[in-house]
Figure 1 (spheres, helix red, strand yellow):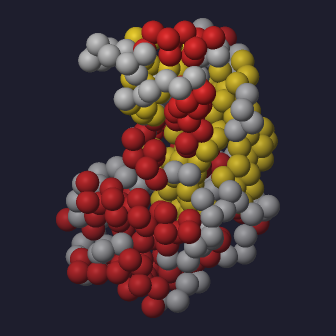
Figure 2: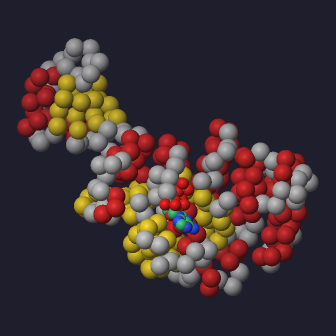
Length: 319
Ligand SMILES: Nc1ncnc2c1ncn2[C@@H]1O[C@H](COP(=O)(O)OP(=O)(O)OP(=O)(O)O)[C@@H](O)[C@H]1O
């Protein structure tokens, strides 16, 4: 489990990370989302002890990274896959890492197999595509068989098959009880991969909750319901406190768009009054929609898993 409490990092007068608190639990994939420059990499670097916080703490399983005796066996990180020496072969790079981390050499072949690079083991890294470099970076992260994985934009450069592969890999690692903390700007990818999401903007927490819950919160989510008694149904739904609009593209049979309730509640209400339904569909907001809502210029709210939205004052320079 990763626990970040009141974490801050300033560069001169600018705050890259500003009082950030969240947890990434073990056994789950936690997506770390935010627009470019939001502070994701800086946060991950502080968790990994590569940057010193200006304030606050970042703990992995209750300890600071630098207090681990054998950090590569505890935490695997993928930060910048471009940082591998171009003249080295994949196997040589991993052997060197294994040696530095006190990890048995046999793990090199194992992780190369896991990431699908066994055939490229003896090839120089300079001939690798971006996707192959990402796979090699991941192999390095997996080398010590760590309980925690911190992956900065691992999907970058992967083709659709590679994206599917890494999604399966991350879900498998979490299913084994590991903590998987992964940043991305590809929202749709995270919707399918992450159990939880932590969204930040301008270094501050915007949302920290289950992915499903976040999608439900998005204002794009609604229930579409069609009935031959649309006008009566609209009145009943509005009386129950729900926002009702006539649905666009309806076949003229009283299709409605209902916000503020799940499909089950709309169906129950209709049943109570014996109203026939011809359609009842739950439409979720896409994570992209919710993300834009949360991180766009109008985002002045923090969403947490407690079911509340708090006003979060933005820094004066952002107004
Ligand atoms: N070494 C540094 N010196 C000065 N400013 C920095 C430094 N590192 C990061 N920053 C600034 O801190 C802010 C957060 O950057 P960071 O790279 O953490 O964001 P990010 O969310 O990872 O963005 P991206 O998705 O573009 O990688 C940015 O405004 C960036 O310019």
